[in-house]
Length: 484
Image 1 (tube, one colour):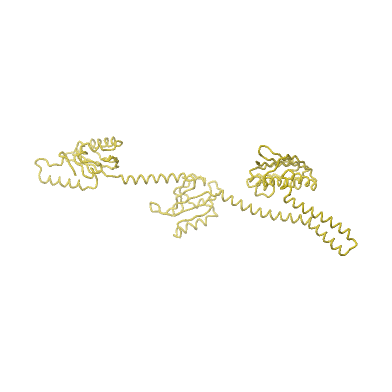
Image 2 (cartoon, helix red, strand yellow):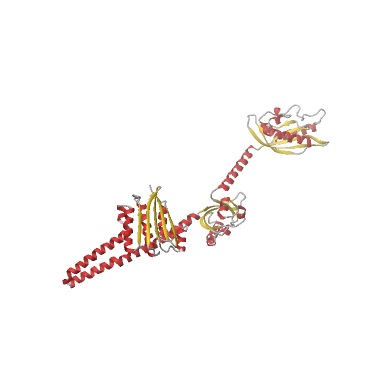
């Protein structure tokens, strides 16, 4: 420890041994305290500085005595310490704060200081004492902690997945905005609620079982797909990942990540329904083909079999039976060809959509008695899927007009414009029932059936659109598909 000749601790003339002993004890105490120490006179000028104080400033004690130490305070903090020190000297009240001192090497050192007056028997303070502690390391740790907490807060508030902190019993302590929006509550409305309160009744049993296993120590983490109930009562599917861990206070808490999977679950359900419907329609199509073959080809084959039996029994009628059998074979060939063409007309692959539509419309008019008008431009060739989809639309429209609408005439218009192929099929029948039309216009129309709803889905997958209009005047179907 260094001191000045005017440090105020030299014994005065005439002072005895007791005074010198007291001074020595004071010097020993100052030298051994683990913090920086400064003693000042009644005017506030430093008269004694210990080695720790000098080390914090990185300067010899002689440069810090008097008001020298204030000159070493960081410029941004100097005005504050000047004012605080002046108030201490003038009013004699304790002061404490944090400041930066500029070390001899230019490094800023954060310090916590605490200054108080030294009592005097005569009344006013004899001087002042300051304790100075280097808190750079602890302040850095505190700043790191604050930065970490700020990062966590930012992630918590802005994360696109719901986050919640809950007690071991499942009561929500904190919820982020994403979770609040997901379930339709304000954040403060969720705090204090139990997760069981917003869990769908059908999922309560599984949720309770998982939490009981955590409470019994058999697991600390679980994943589950479940339904929450929104504030408006609607159910929403979520995927929950919850971990049980100890907080900084030592309490067990759940930290949960909640992902909205409602759209995915609804899509999965739609696929399941569609798969079931497709299997059902496949069976219906097989029955229809079986019925068609039974009503036509099967009966013709039966007649051929009878003719062969008669040939064996009535040789005299051989010529007539052979002629009849030949006619039956021609009829069977036509029937099989008709069924084959209905499934997939060869003309569609060989010469394209326009000729295939002309052939099909003419054949359908002959079989049904409907008057079918055609207005088909020379539209050229398109991709196989495009041509097949438009052909199926015409098939379905003609079949509906004949079976359900009691139409007398049907008009088919096919043309190409502005990079699109446009198909319009219009009949003069009774129109569609309102409930059927509503189902076809519903978002899940693809589940209605394989007819026009199936065509809607097929056209949509190709980037096009199928519109349906119907009323007492009849029904109009308009399909538009992009083409290169």
